[in-house]
Length: 303
Image (cartoon, rainbow, N blue to C red):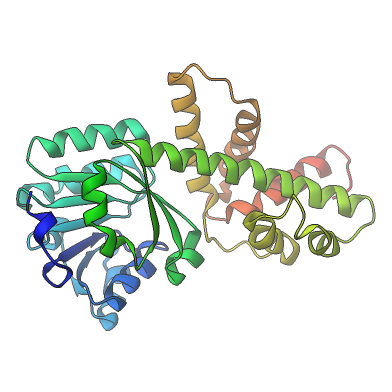
């Protein structure tokens, strides 16, 4: 593969998927001096990046045609497969190029994509992220990378503007790490929401409670960021409930394949399933608080 010998100045990046997360990640890459061509299904979202220096492509294959690095930040495995294989992005890529899939998909799909691309001489790294829109904008994402360690090392300069990359294992391991991350996020959001309800129902101040426990064992970014969202009741999506549910669906499928029982994850999965089914998929995942409040109100509890 030729990617190892190409310096940063010669790297040409195609970035497929410029939504809530993708757009700020593209801006970070442009700010680091990379040449980036972007494509998004909704062209207006891609077009908004032209002022930052991005080249706008009308199709995935047009974006990938001159790229030696293709980064995907798409909704799910179906979208990744469609964009790469059905819409022709892979067909125009040269052997030695690398696809970095930063979408969150099931590990089995990541392994399948890696195998199909290897047959074409194209590298594949599954590198999902954690940190939300705030982390994407600040370049502080936690990047969990699965695949060939030497290839990941050669791509350090591309990962660096977006965040901190850690090689966590072979193909699919990055996605497995992301699923574990999303387990912790979902269960912790549920725990923080229930604690806020307990404090308020008992006559305490959720805001004061949050301040009181910060610095102790319960402190976390979930308590900090999502706890504040709950207190302020501001639920515009950083990470949508629909995407949280998608990840939890993948966790449950993976657990079943591994013959694991995950009772806490099962419980929060059921709550997110019901919340999204009621039409709340585009609300931030911290809005699970509203679902739990409604459940208590319907049972005669104090909202």
